[in-house]
Image (cartoon, rainbow, N blue to C red; front, side):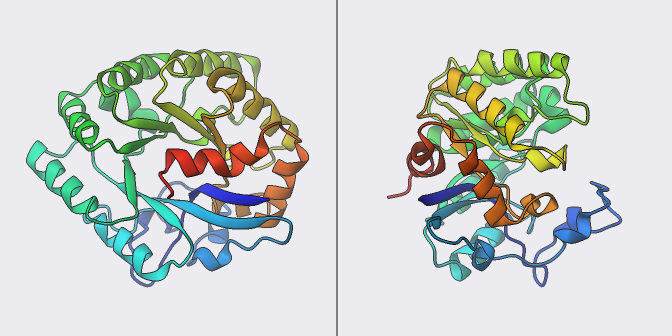
Length: 285
């Protein structure tokens, strides 16, 4: 089975910044040293019958002030088919934001950008400058990677307004909307389900299921299957992707073991979820 891994991060510690990987800066994960080293496409090793047909690189903090530098490094060093999601600061003044977008889209691999919303989602999504800058992304028909907790319904409603006002942007929800918390309980799951249901109505929204290890290192395949299948009921088989979040997967599983676990879930339409949908939503030729 051929996989397009739609959510990976590579690090070049010799040249990039990656301040978030340093032990003295957040997040203060006790096992951060597992990923505090350089990673490239050569680390995406799979054994038959699984093969890597390409990947989508999500910005990883190489240089947030000059995000095109990360793209330049990738395009010079990667041989596999890939698309890239660049870092962007949604709060930049309009002229500076437009200049950065114009520069980024000169790189062939760039299909979109990301500003991690997380706990600041409501403040950002209701900010006038941010909403103006989304208009620039809409003009360019770029993807926007949405990383936030969908259990926060005020933020979800603000996101829904942005989605409706920018129909030419493909909004790709990262990490299944982060449903897993330190205590996986019914109240959190219910809020997450309701939040996803709000935005699933919009056809320019897709979702990636990954990042399980970010909030719960000891997740299991049953939780993964439950979450993926709920996403399928909301979004349908053509708007759901399964990805890895490599190298953060290494907190819990080797790359091979991660995909073996996904295969064991025996979810329907795996070829679409592991390859075809990523090919479509990230404009692989």
